[in-house]
Image (tube, rainbow, N blue to C red; front, side, top):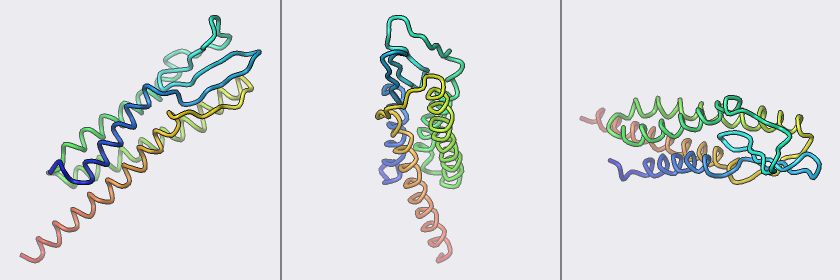
Length: 157
């Protein structure tokens, strides 16, 4: 049934993944080096002539991981009749989201901080993968509860 609570959690996780494409992850501002925004689609220089360039290919893992998480969340949302497959896809999505968080915070933000020498100012986009992860874990918990309920009902027959 699409009206289950875990469907709501999966929808919120998908919305959080979509929001990552629209909100910056971090801002890097320095008067001498410039103003930069780290987005899922790359590092965007806000100055007319940015001193640091980062190609789209360098930041493409962020876009692919975010899009993958979004797609898997939507697929999992509509597989409500196949709970075991839903649990497996959800476990993979949780793993992909954890990898996304690690890549954002340990690789991209640290490397840009080393290149520019500027401490980041975290924006809403940095919290979206965390929101996504929390709601994926909640959905996983409730799907497992449903599966346990169905198995217990089968044992009683």
